Structure formats: structure tokens, C-alpha cells
Length: 207
Image (cartoon, rainbow, N blue to C red; front, side, top):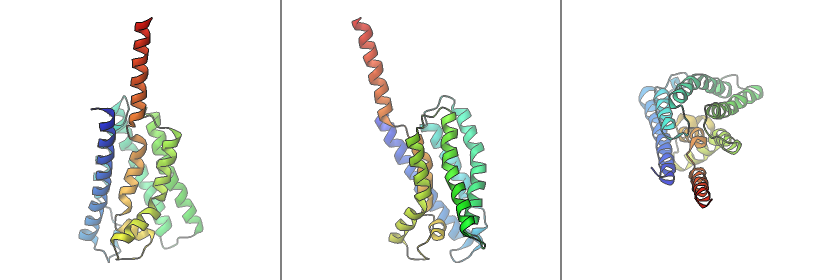
């Protein structure tokens, strides 16, 4: 597969996975808990492990790593503490005893999730730069206000706040895309390598 085509295929499948994850979250919430019930705040969503498995499969297909088996195993191990950290952060913000301290604590955890994910992928050989890490982290954190803003155009139920952005599933695509962003196989890197290799061959033939 050509580099440019592979790049756009990775983007399209990542966005499709994000949208499907958001829809699946919303369908599960409506069918299992109901929109007006509060049981969803303490319930386990089976959408989460399914989407995580699909995301790992996507990463294994498109990430530029040498040891894919080790990469998949490390991602599987990462998402358990990642899920627990996200759950702690959400309860700290939306819990009954939420405060300025709990919000700051949750923000630190929320920042650490994409940062540690990018660091892990970097250690496993993925070509993740500081710019990619910053972009991933910013989108992961800004997913809350962005999804709240987008939801306002499509839905009128509930208030325009962060908890309804989560409840409605609108935040899910942004979170998934933010984690997949640093793993995208950017074609420019491949083109430069090919050009360098061709130039080296031509220089060798000329000499």
C-alpha cells in the first residue's frame, strides 16, 4: 500500500472507529440504563473493552513498530491502569464531593493518560515526536469543551456541560482520535526516506 493511501486509510478508519465507539456508548446507555436514570454513572460499559480491542487492532495495523506482538501486549497492559485512572478522574470531577482540589487532581491524571501512552509507544519503537505528543495531549484534554460545543448543534436533551458530553457519547470520538493521532503513519517521513535512499543509490552508481 502506498504511503499516502495508507495515511488516509489510517485516518478514515480511526475516525470511523471513534464515531462507532460514540454511537455504541450511547446505544448501551439508552438500552441498559436509560437517559433519565443515574445508574450509568456507576455502571460498567461493555463498549469500553470492545472499543479498546478495536483500537489496539487499528494501532497494530498502522503503527510503525518492529515488534507488533510486543506492541499489542504492552497496549493491552496499558489500558487497564488507563481505564482505572480515567475512572478515578471522572469520579473526582463529577462526584458528590467535587472541589477545586479534586478538579486539579483529575486534570493531572487526565494529562498523564495521553502523555504516558505516547511515552510507552515511543519506548516500543513508534516514531512519536514531542509535537505529536503535545497535539495528542491537547486534543485529549480539549475533548471536553469541543464535544460539549459540537453536541449543542445536534442534541437538545440535557444541559450543555461536560457530564452530558460524556453521557451522550459525543466525547468518545475525540478521545479515540487523540490517542490514535501520534500513531498515524505520516507519509512525509516515508517520502523523505525513499528520496534519501534513491539519492544514495544514484550517488553510488555515479561514483
